[in-house]
Amino acid sequence: MKNYYFLLIILFLTGTGYKNMPIHRQPPGRPNIVIIMADDMGFSDIGCYGSEIHTPNIDRLAKEGLRFTEMYNNAFCSPTRASLMTGLFPHEAGMGALADAKNRPPGAYEGYLNYQCVTIAEILDQYGYYTALTGKWHLGELRPHWPTDRGFDNYFGLISGAANYFDIKKTKAPNVVRHMALNDQPYTPPDSGFYMTNAITDYAVKILNEQKQQEKPYFLYVAYTAPHWPLHALPEDIAKYKGKYSLGWDSLRVERYKKQLAMGLFKNKVKLSPRDSEVQAWNDLSPKQKKDMAAKMEIYAAQIDRMDQGIGKILDAIEATGKKDNTIVIFLSDNGACAEGGIWGFDNRKNGLPPGGVDSYMSYGQSWANASNTPFRYYKKWLHEGGISTPLIVRWPAKIAAQRDGKFVNQVCHLVDIVPTILDVTGAKYPKEYKGNKIQPLDGQSLLPEIKKGQLQPHKPLYWAVNGHKAILVEKYKLDAIADNAPWELYDIEKDRSELNNLASKYPTKVKELAAMWNAWAERVGVFKDRPPLAKE
Image (cartoon, rainbow, N blue to C red; front, side, top):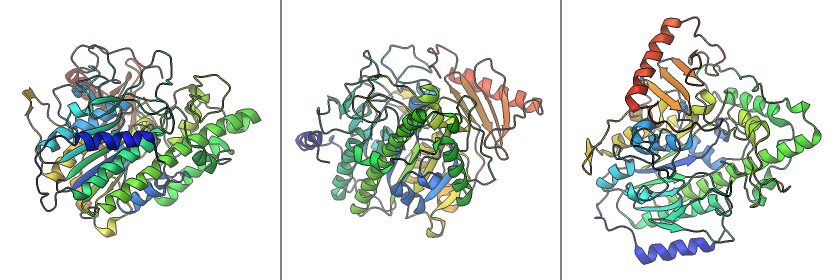
């Protein structure tokens, strides 16, 4: 789709050029890196993890690479992006909650990436990489906390959180403002012909096309807003899914679960969790409720479909550079599917219009989110598996043996492992200081032994504290609680990934041990100090 905004981008880039940086010849074996992140996409929402949604390009990535089955995120937009960019748990980077423009005190909830962390873009920039980001930032609303302030040579996209896909001026509420930027300047999309997912893709493809003539290695981060609400999709994509969800969420969960088992997605057989207690049985809905809710899921699926089409263009552009073999492509989601809006989802316009168009503003709600996270419980903002489990696909033809293509990987891993892995494969060093600031040590560990040789390794303890929820994973035991004063729940994740059998009363000593570890970590990173009001579930 030829958009006026794209001409503006071309004119801007040809007029100003990239930042003046020395060009270094790419050493043999030094890989290019592309990270692609979906937004609010559930564990089972792509074909290669059990979905019926048409995702041939993401599935192609999986077929040509590795699929991780036990990859964890931080259950919330900004905290996840902070860990991905820094290799730290989010509180250490000042991002224990969502980004905003408020003047919060220094600490775990500053609302932007602090200066006791360093981004992977800042590190790679020092090691001769060209760095670019297209899409959602959500790690600092105002300057000097934009991507170009934190190591990216070029940027195009949404500085803020969720936005109208067609017109960012039409926001969720009258007092909400959404910011976009092109490099270090504010950007306003044209009044017509704009669709956020296409815009993000087009800029990524332009960046990649320009890499054909460059000798420097590149790092490209593509952060889609799809399929985060609002439910906005193009008519031709919606048409593909017309009538696809008329059987409802109960049937969908069963069909996805069967597909997951058939493909061998899990190391041990994982049970399908019961339908959320708040969610009504599909067969109990009225005909109108069924029609309205099925339409919401059709649009959600169309949003993922359009993102997949964009990923196909990105993969084609990588191949056209002639650097496919030595380009690492990483795909993942920032958290589990989103239940915001309750069992029916919200409708912020209440104007009688159906979902999908520019003047609607809806979510698909808890009922469909429960299906998106098959087979797990709960969703975004929760620390049960439905909130923190993400697909992770890694493709690197030069280093992943052909006989391992399409294989499942049962290595426990977390977002904090991405930065150490990139450092490992590029030879870049993590600094103790950066621009005069002392930098906190990395929390993650490299996944390179598994990626290159299939070597599973024990993982260091993993910690979470999100929106009042708390959790810790040590070896096979996961301890979590849904509020500061809620009782701890204990699960054996190796045997019970769906968290159906609470072992807390059976193993009180283990609960006490893990709780003490979590409390010590929470004290160290400042979980409870100056915490802003919790977001509504």
